[in-house]
Length: 252
Image 1: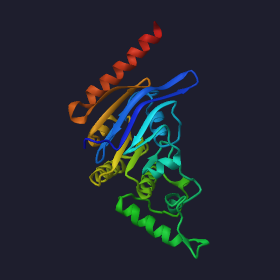
Image 2: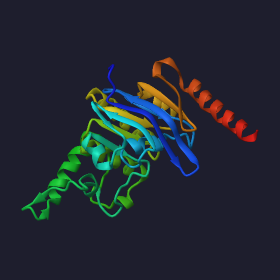
Image 3: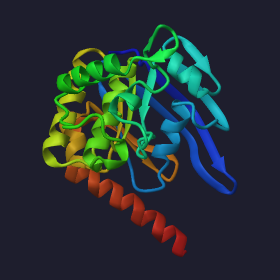
Image 4: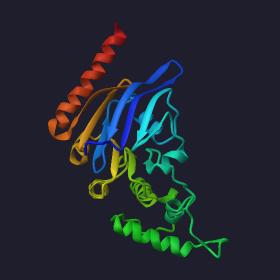
């Protein structure tokens, strides 16, 4: 696709004396997975929190299709079709699977009572469709494994809909089997025309699913390329080289 669904232009953000983003340009296209990579403190999470409406930038523009925003609120981001799975998952530990998937979108019966039966049935259908295995969906989330919690957060994002989906380290707590299924899910969503933005430290995983890779370093976009134009080894060397350059500058 020649026209990006998301375009961020010269986005800046400071936290006191710390420059988190120094003027970042970023694009994401429909039917593609765009990965954002970089060392710790490079600005990856700050950038997606601005896109998801969790942070207000100090400057720049955010283009969503044909609309332009100086900043987004969380509500505006959702209205623009943006759903986000943060690294901390933002699950309610006291609720079960259905309670988390339908959080804020509860199904009611007689307009006054929660329809727990219907929500659990639809939860089972959703998890089955995504090949996510949670044997007891009635137990509170706090009793689930890290992989189950991560998978549930991804399922909630899929249920929420929207055509721009942001995932921050979506497989960090998963085993190999669960990780493989989530990667397959990304490919399925891509075929549906979804725009997927992925943050991951696993460079081999990134090259398995991403179409484009954007490299952030010290709050700046230092490279952007099609996945086929590089390799995990080359990308790792670039990130290490940038980190060493920053360390050398600090020592001068």
